[in-house]
Length: 534
Image 1 (spheres, rainbow, N blue to C red):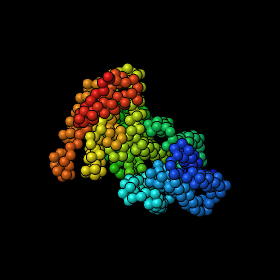
Image 2: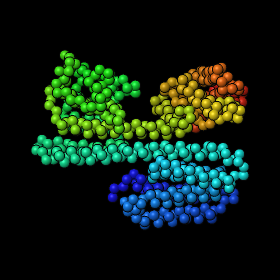
Image 3: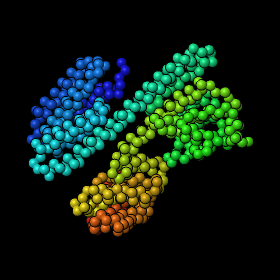
Image 4: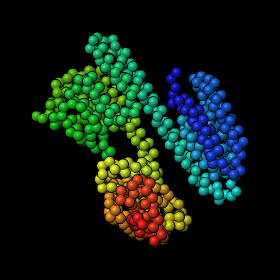
């Protein structure tokens, strides 16, 4: 039986609930807390387990077919919220780390419901969490910072998850529509003779290929397969996919196959204004030219005689052009255009999916406040760079670990909003003073780190001094300080260490840089200290 996206995720939720129960059980056993009632926790786990087992015997798929699937979803959400709230209440209230389990409920709510119902669920969670805070926290001052930090995060995750869910559903609907179009086209082609039967077979292969769009294949590999299929099917001399640049001024060749001879399709870049392919972008209409000589753009170096091009569309946005050209004059029929438009929609879908995946990947490795890489990416990159140093035996790398001086005092004096402004400006300044090959990351809190490949100890100290001086002198202009009411100076302490001179592995290198930073802090702050073994 075919399951839609929410139904598939309903099955995933059942498995996820087992993992949550197991994790809670392990945490309770491994890290018990004083005053914690294990019996009550076990009771909650048993109730959740009973539900999880019982749901396997309930014909929920039939309920969904009858339009009553929302009842099961509401039951799921209610159970999960009550279960997690109970665990939070029994494991320390606002101090409980099990608050993070609310994020899982939030994501599944975004999948099950429309955005309005999803936010209603989040409001219910927030009210329950506030009630837990009232029951477990003695003072209002203890609760307020936690609520202000955690509850808005729930709404942010709900909004982002709802957005991604709607995008996935929209893409699934588009794919289903295109699948129906392809099946209809295949049915039409099968009534023709031998030549049409051969094309029908090719389209069937294309249909199988289209099902792979969005799989684990990389974007470039998918597009190369698409132009291979297109070139073989339409017997083209040149096939290219060109994308509109970020400024919307040029078309840039993304992938191509065939002959290049110096003409309009041979260039990597084509101006949109005043060009044939640019006109496809501007009008959003397909282009068929059976005699390229009559356009007035033919030259002695241009061998192409015929051209067919279709726009690549995502919803109503033109993102590029899919074009095929021929050395000999060719008569195009409606089937040629339909085929190219059909496969062009697959190419556009692949490009759009790749962009969505890239956005998700960036979110996973990027710090939300500063836009720098996060701690996880830093650790992975440092490990890879050290392995590359060992393998290639080039000049090593330096690590610069830095910490904003008296940042807690700054936050206490001027507030977290201005403190966040300092973190953002430090992040921007670090990007300005580093190379493209360097990796700049937020290490945590007010700490930052730079991986500088091919940088010896002396150069790392010079780099650190430039950064230290810039932050001290240029982070805020005099006008900005006056406007913001900032009197306290913002300075930074930096510790450096170099591989392989100071350390033989990743952990030692970080430790050496951290010790150097500690030395910089203890000798007056606002300075750069390189690690020196004693």
